[in-house]
Amino acid sequence: PGVSVEVSVEQGAFRILTQFEDRGAEHLEIRGNLRVKVGLGETIALNLSLNDGRFHRSLSDTLLCPAACILFKSTIESKRTESGGVLTDFNFNVDVPPLRMQLTGLDLGILTRGIGQLARRDAESVEPREELELRDPDAMRGHRGIQMAGAFAFQGLHVLLADDRRGAQPALSVEARCPSMGLELASQQGLPSRWSWSCARDALEIEVNSFHARLGVWEPVLSDWRLSLTFRQAPLAQPGR
Image 1 (tube, one colour):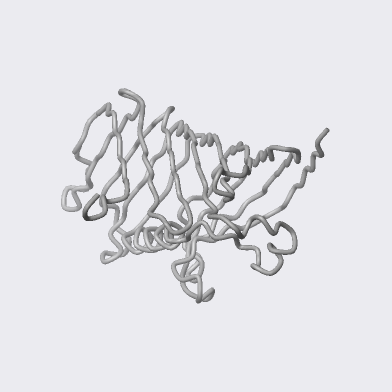
Image 2 (cartoon, helix red, strand yellow; image 1 turned 135 degrees about the vertical axis):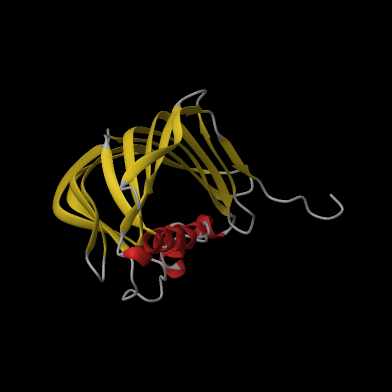
């Protein structure tokens, strides 16, 4: 039998940092009411819901999204490999109800750098090495790795891109919906990561409009497009192999 723990947090915050070494640097922050339920057993089950989420830029307190709700469910399982390492299987589902965001070029730059910082984190444990050796001596004898598989469902996303060089004047409007999007990632300590991201056939619906400042009207760029997308990144072959 496992143990179940449920925690509610009012106005909890998650930060997307551009520099892990400088916590005072400009960053993006998601703040809202969190409800977390964790089931502990051979497999860890994690359910998280965010309500009344507020997405903003920290130092200037610029509001990017006034209200967001996210439902997140996942399972985590660690197992020993034949080589003596530890492999963590992480499976998750994310459901995002319709939401509206307003971003500038500065916000996109911060978001891109923040995601880049996260992507460069390797498969090392955040637990201090000496504590890990005491708790699980075998864990240090082999490589550690992670396998991740997840599904996203965006019920509706409206992003308004503004020109920060012109007083945040509207420039581009992007509306998208994707009820079925998949992500897979494999990372092992000391080896390059592999990942893939895909949408089911005709699952991604997108519409793009640009703002004509002189006439004060929106003009269509892409109208009611339905797409199937697949992105893959794999390690480059080594010379002589």
